[in-house]
Image (tube, rainbow, N blue to C red; front, side, top):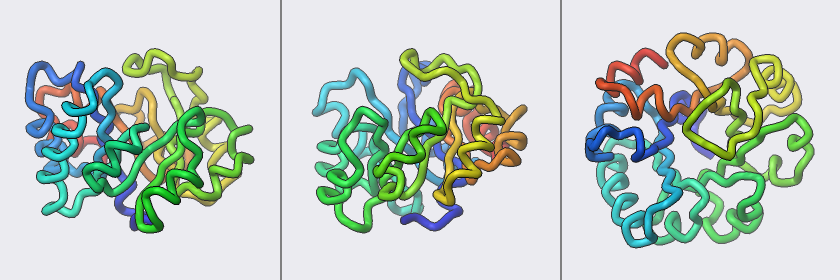
Amino acid sequence: MAPPENYRLCLVTDRALARGRPLTEIVAAAVRGGVTMVQLREKTAATRAFIEEALALKALLAPLGVRLLINDRLDVALAIEADGVHVSQDDMPVALARRMLGPKAIIGLSITTIAQISNDDVGLADYLGVGPIFAQVTKLDASPPIGLAGLAKIRGATNKPIMAIGGISAANAADVRRAGADGLAVVSAIMAAADPATAAAALT
């Protein structure tokens, strides 16, 4: 499990928001601004391109001590020896992911409803990605927003580290933390920003 401070601000990548800029450029700037973890999310990239992108990010982040997680794709995480993986409710069970990645890997699990807190996977995950908190546009198949009240309810049901995600911006980040989030997982507020470093700093 990563130290608590590693969960404070996670950048979830989305090349569609990069404005043509190299992903490594955005990530490097975001880390300068305070990002403590990066989750590489690729829904359409071919496997070879995904691996090349992941290796480039690993080369950038490893010397800085910033953890790199792969979204969904356990094969890519294994191929590049990433720090871990983030899985959703319909992906590979956490127990199997743990067996394949080993005890030192960071494994995150998406939680979209309070009912999911009773799943066996929760106890095996290192952290929970809870949300969407607010309406968002970067994940078209996302569940309905749970709001700050929903986040607070989930916070009361688990002692696992929570990274809140979904519609989080500098304007509402403090409210999300007060509702119980240990950290924030952010996509567009950093990826689409003209100055990712400044955008990240505003969220810390």
